[in-house]
Amino acid sequence: MLGLAAAPAKADRIADLEAEVRQLHEVLTRIEVELKAERQVRKKAASVTSSPAINGPEPAHVGVQAAATPPRSAPETAAEGAAAPAQTWPKGYSAVPGTDTAVKFGGAIRVEAIDDIRSSQGGRTDDATAIPARGTAKANIGGSLNGSVSGSRLNFGSLSRTEIGEVKTFLEFDLGPEFSPGFRMRHAYLSTGNWLVGQTWSTIMDMDTVPDELSAGGSVGYGWLRRPQLRYSLKAGDEGRVDLAAEMPNADFTGPNAIRTAPDLVVKYSADPSWGHYALGGMLRYLRSDTGAGEKADSVVWGIVGGLGIKTVGEDMVTLQTMDGTGVGTVLNQGSGLSAAVVNGSFHTFNTYGGTLAYQHYWGPKLRSTLAAGYDHFSNATDNIGANGLGIRSLASLHANLIYSPITAMDVGLEYGYETFRASPAGSGASSRLIGVVKYGY
Image (cartoon, rainbow, N blue to C red; front, side, top):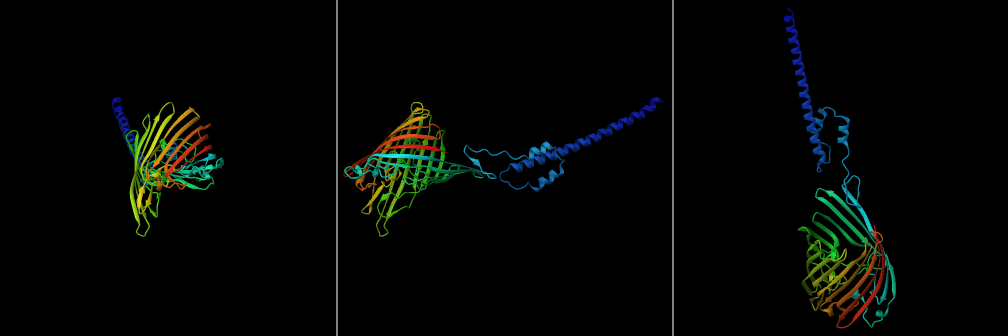
């Protein structure tokens, strides 16, 4: 009797357990479905938030799915609602709130004193073509002392992260080339990827072999020019770069009605191996003159630049830059206007060769010196009229300085410069000056 009574009770308990297992299975299935839906919502929400092409609210279907899911815990909600990490920018840039742009301001204060020990070059900037000829009254004038802050600069740069990549801009002014200050634009360009457009240093220049000098004019013999251009640059190997450019031409020849009809074309290769630096480039120019009365002249001219820098002892380096060709005086430092002349309706282009050799020595971490010698030679000298009104056959210069940098941003220096010219058919002149400079960059 007892066995018969226990059997139905045991069966009831088994049935109850089976019911509980089914209920538990249903609960687990429902939880699994809800978790799967929540993971899909999170995945879609993350893809919408991370896409730079979508700046508006989330799509409607995401909101519907999110409303159907159970509420999440407070830590999860706070983590997903946190602001995206702030963008990092290169040193010196400050972010513009609410944008993908950062800006920076900089420049330099430069104070200089210039003593024309012998003769005078007529201004703050060294110009050997302006030296008075020996035997003239101007050549006997010396001892002129002048001061200037015209070398001071102010610049502005920006960096924006856009759909086409980073876009950079740069704008810089100084107070002009003369003793009396006046605003002058030095650089104004933008660049993105491999492209640059605007005004900056000419592509034909090799900045790495320009001597470290204090004088505003510097040595003769090397390239020195800023102008508007369109430039494309690409990497060449591990150490090299190729630059291609079309640049605004200068009508820098003596003659009537100079016309700019074609850009100056430039190609240059440069590299920085472990032992130093080297560069080789070429320029092609088209010169044209038209009086409008039937007198026309034109000429295709060319020039090449070569630069070489070799590390010697410690931080010391010897550099050589040469600029050669015909009709390329415009590129030369102190060579403006010495490219060609129109004589009797035809071009007389000036063949040019020369260069600058310099050695920079570091006496210590904060004290350095540069010794630089430069030379330029011009053909057709009787037609090659310099600022002194004479036909320039050759220019030569010698500069030596001592520069102390108590801090990275400051230079305090003294430099001696000697420059001379020879004219055709006869004539020569020489000038020497001492310049002291205090410069602080910010």
